[in-house]
Length: 479
Image (cartoon, rainbow, N blue to C red; front, top):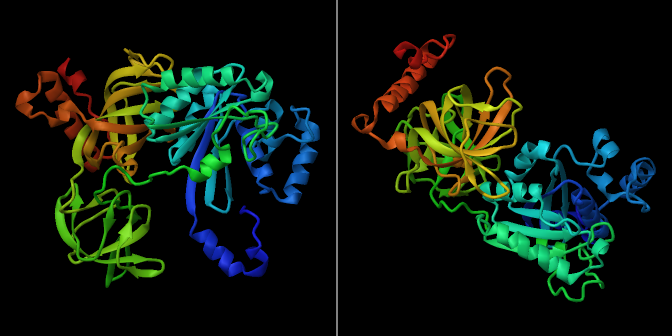
């Protein structure tokens, strides 16, 4: 859906051109259950006049059956579409809404607040640039507020708007707003979120959502919509080096061989010297091909096909980088934060499938450094990780993988963990660094580390040449 514009009727091509060139902001709404996330999105769309009349009529009709607000209609029904969501008045799955204003295009991810759906929230946040964290003015900062804020920080979102909702239920108290603001800032001091802004709102009544409220004369900031339109979001990875994870090798005929993928970071141009990793083979960019034809250059976020001067071996899962850029890490072990998403806990030593930047390998957690208590930020000892828990672990894989720290580049620093029996996504991870054991020589390793390193290498060969064999467990042989 787009905003209302006179150009739609008078000059549709001019309108489409104007719409195409707008900046796009992806943001997530999160917080504790029943803090008003879905109602807020409904209010944003309703007061911005971005709801079609037939959709609005359907919502008013459904409100007679599901309405819990004692209002003319329930705005939350605009995004809570599942029957179970409407019956319980909660959000279960991530709902996406698309709209635009005169200044910007938006994609909203409305995420659930229940602890059991934390994995859904982490999925929705993984592609966002900004987070709107709602806090019920009556209850203040709660467990899920802390949990979601920590995940937002972990996923590299650097802009947060804290919307203190339901201010109408506390008589728009400035003291209460300042109390919640102080409590949140105290907690967020330990998080890596450099840009935090606060706004007092009533999503149900519309105060300070799209239109400024007369009830908050003490507040001199902008409305939520004004802040969303004005916030400067730097989407460039901290890493300026070129990274192209190869997703597909395009070979339509004998005269063309291209390597397709979406640029994760940096830029590239014909004539640039490149290196394919992990093989280390070198070549030079011959052309950059897109749907529109060949281009003079390409930047992060673009889906492209590269052709090279030399016929070097590059496969899906390899990484193409510029030769003169900072090089990524190539290793078989790394430390990473993992958000566990499976009912079955993560078990040390169990083999999982790992997908990282298009490459699929087998691996296992060799060590859990600590589990993180999101309430206190305390680092706790743990032997396994349960559903929705977060931990720092060491992962060992059976083949060399190429990666950057997640804080530098999302596209080459994130991975998913897949249960090999059910083929379900069991966890999501953000790489912190190369594991200490991976940077050691054999002489520097103790006996157990040598066994582990040899076991990873041996299982890599087993999987490659004897895919139906079970993984080798050297500890059984040693006993």
